[in-house]
Image (cartoon, rainbow, N blue to C red; front, side):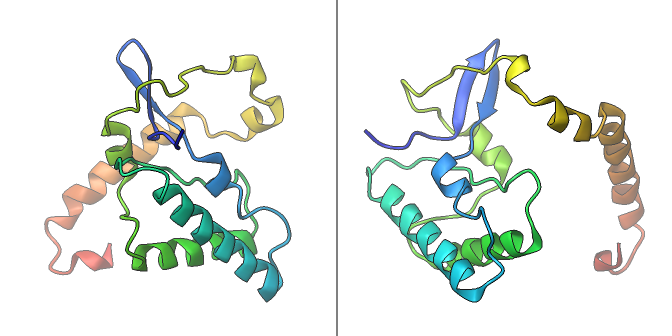
Length: 154
């Protein structure tokens, strides 16, 4: 009867985080004109307010960008999220907080098969080694920051 929390237990102690499809797809299409961009932002804000009014139960909702957004789509989404943060019906949080939130009982926990993921998108993904390298670089930067007087320079 209402949009469930983003956290979904999928078995084996693993929790998946599901993006809200309606909010996440508001920024599709050609948003290069001011009217189209403004309409997308207004529809996003209206949808988020409507989602808030569904229940008094607090829940975590994740909004995800498209896989390959255009600059105008990314700008419209950023504008909408900035406006949402200044509203009084929503609070921003880190993705890790959404993953730790209590799942909504009865929410869908079905996982599509690996074959449902398009091969063209699979080819565009970064390899695991790239993420391992990012983690290692981040750790080195964190160590380096300790000796700097102004951390914002890193």
